[in-house]
Amino acid sequence: MDFKALATKRYSVRKFSREPVTAAELQAVLLAGRIAPTAANRQPQRVLVLTEEEGLKKLDACTSCRFGAPAALIVFFDRDAPWARPFDGERSGWVDASIVTDHMMMQAADLGLGSTWVMHFDPAKVMELFQVPETLVPVAVLPLGHPAADAEPSDRHALRLGETETIFYNGF
Image 1 (spheres, rainbow, N blue to C red):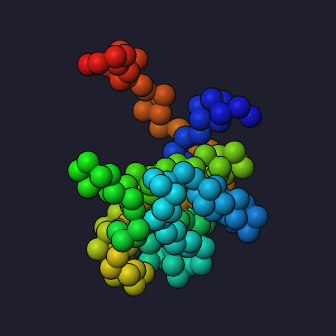
Image 2: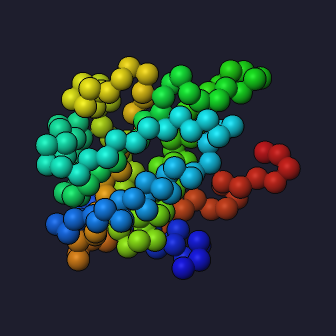
């Protein structure tokens, strides 16, 4: 499948089947995150993989947006690891973790898996329940699994602002 077709086909899955994610599928998704570009190749991302019921129940205490997925990834960045822009000191951790998350979502879609980017979670609870080191910053939860037979994109999925509202040439 070409990239445009893949990106168009992918949607936020909010209803998963009970079919487990295989070890090979999970490894392919994680590899896509590992090879994602990060600023100065600093690779500040840290990914917590949840496949066991105990971890998934803890996640349910942090967010209502797991949607029954049989696996989930929590993507963090290590605040001590990102590159810093020399002009203003802005650090790349949020962007790096987001690129990693996007790569994993696209790989999941290419494998026929569903996912959805979740930012609706309690970061303090994530830190507490998973005993996360203080240097890590949670960025996204990525429920992962096979879409249910009746899963479908939300009504908002295909809505896009017009090109002239989002793309500007040679100035604003």
